[in-house]
Amino acid sequence: MSFPGSPASLEAVRAWYEESFRTRWEMGASVSIWQHGQEVLNLAHGHRDRAHTREWDRDTLVPVWSATKGPAAVCCLLALEEAGIPLECPVAEVWPEFVGGGKSNVAFIHLLSHTAGLCALDERAPIYNYDAVVEALERQRPLWEPGTRQGYHARTFGFLLDEIVRRLTEAESLGEYYREVFGSPMGLDFWIGLPSAQWDRVSPVYPGKISIANSDQPFIKAFNTAGTLTQRTFTSPFGLNAVSDFNQSEMWSRGYASMGGVGNAQGLAKFYAMLAQGGVWNGVQMVPETVVRRFEQTLTQEVDSVLLTPIAFSTGMMQDPLNEDPESDGGKLRQLYGPSLRAYGHPGAGGSLAFADPENGISFAYTMNQMEIGALPGERVVGLVRALYGG
Image 1: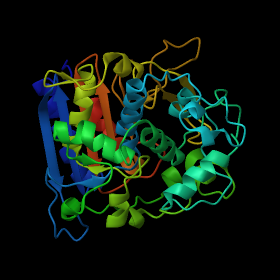
Image 2: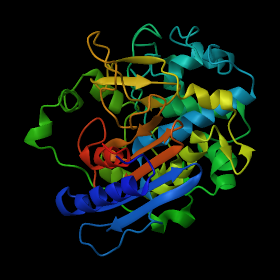
Image 3: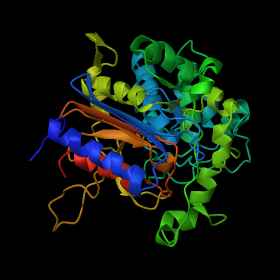
């Protein structure tokens, strides 16, 4: 039996990865795995386009959608920590205008655990107008009593965190704060707001295809049904709904903290490698250990009102939900992040995934340009994680 990070487990990852290009419609993809602060595997293969005219290599950047949320959450928690503000504090203490719509008791912990009831906006605010979105959030009445229900804040999450970071720091945006605190000091090839000098390295992303096999998923049905909370959430604020929109340089440069990150697997895995080591990188405590520990502690788990499947959240990070059946062994319902109960991270639409496993000193990231359909990553990346852990 192999253990994570062993030569046998890494060879199993390589074998699954290579098979995906032959039988699982992989086009261009990268995998980066780190253990105890050192990269132990870096795979990059395929093409940036369907015509196979541009090769994909380890330096290729690609939009990673909601995998952006992990680094964004770390930025927000660090900004709060440095300001000495507890997560149980009302958001309005930092952002006075936020009280509109009866939100005086909404705390930072509600925003970071997707329990604030602000996943969908009643106002039709355009996503490209930051001020309009923030003002709509200030007026929005929670869709449920904060803290009593979980619903994935697919798009609004980034605007909420971005505004908090802007008010707590001197940075002009969360993306700028990320670059100053983590991106530049750590040399991360991951950006929340991509500079024009990097644009020619970006691969376009290609939409997945709905098949008979996945068309009956509750999430897919709700996503395509007008008026559902799921569809309202993924169109609030409105705009940037087509996959092709994410292939535009204007989108890359805006730095949407929910789903605008652009990078490669190595950049994301290196960031999580720092977290897997208790927030330490090259002997420097980048994130206080008390903050890092929060990512391991589950705050909420239930059938998510937006994703319509069991989801667990810690403070801004996603975790694997546990089987709560009294007759079960209490193990994980799925293993996106491996078998460790301490592991956490965040997926992105279409299959991208990054996580930290502090128990084994592991970090992992997968990026690709051929998307899959579904609320959570599919078999291409799940198989990589399974192989890494000897499953």
